[in-house]
Image (tube, rainbow, N blue to C red; front, side):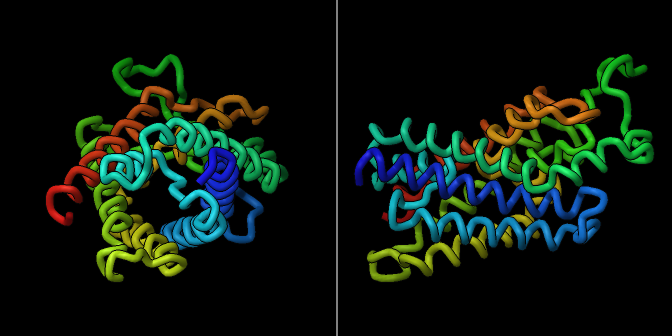
Length: 263
């Protein structure tokens, strides 16, 4: 696998993953969207289909990691060369930023309508000058389209939730070949991984929104911070480290656990 294969596959695959995943969040969240208020089931299945599409597109080119936690787990397991890890991570971050930008382009009119609606703005707590100075800044009114946030802000709990969910994801990916005589599952593996992501969202996604992928959160959060969105509010950078650190720890644990328990 060449460096250009890794770059092209991971950039395009991750961009499609975020375009479709962020797209379903936009569809469910924004006013004047036909899918407004479709709910959590729509989001979890939308993200599952996003994983399926991105993995299918990139699988034959780069192996479709699309996630630094997966890349780290595969490097620890031995299936990915450590020298390739920086290229995987950089390509994934670039792809995530492209995908988030395309979500904005697709829903540009809905973003404008949502962020200039008096009801939406009136419902947002203030980010500055709050009476309780210990309270964290509130997320902007559309930040959830771009990145994750906790329902209860407790950093220890939030990190642990992301670790647990990511261990499930990465272990499910690493063990796929064991169920097919060590030959891997090919295209079927993309479907299995997508269903695992749906399951994680339904079962473990409630506390934090299940980032389980550092670039899935960081790339779109960067785009949120720079887009010319009126009244967009805070990008909540005080929380941004959680969906980076938690999934990376989870990916490392999954890689080590695979080596101990399954090899």
